[in-house]
Every structure is written in structure tokens, then in C-alpha cells.
Image (cartoon, rainbow, N blue to C red; front, side, top):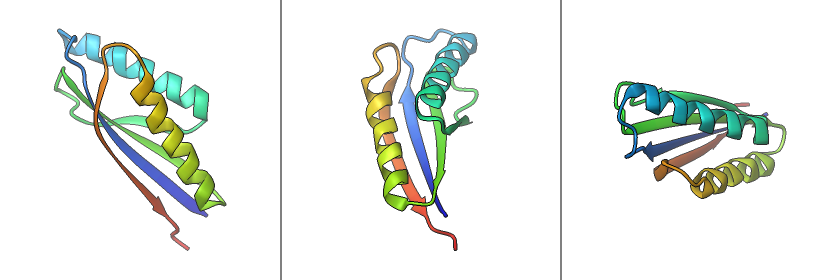
Length: 97
């Protein structure tokens, strides 16, 4: 079993309120979750209206597949046009057994 985790930090400069931020984050989470069938959650910067950090998780029996999926997620979120700008990301693939 291989577990891949991805942490992506976004800047959301156009958001004037936490409500605007939640709408943007929810949209990103839904689009990525539906397209790649992976788990997504907001994990940091919960009370900052112009920053968002999302965590993504993928499990597979093949580490290369996990790497490929998470790399495509990074490409996808970088290509999303709108008010979210990717600041940085970290990816880790674990083989716990």
C-alpha cells in the first residue's frame, strides 16, 4: 500500500471575507475531488481570508500511480483560472508496510 499526501498553499487576493474564501475553497475541493477521485480538505489558514492550505490524499498499490495522480493534481490546481494562486506545494509518498 502506498499513500500519497499533497499540501498546497494558495493566495486568494480577491476575497474580501471568509465567506468569499469558503466559496473559493469549496469550489477547488469539489473540482479536484470529482476529477481525480481523491480526498481533499482545508487543513491550515482557516481564519485567514487571503490564504488557504489544502491537503490531498491518494492511496494505491503502486507508488508510481500515486506520484502521477498527485502531480496531475498540482498541474490542475495551477491551471485553474480565477482568484486562487498557488504559492507552494509539498508532496510525500509513504510506503508504511
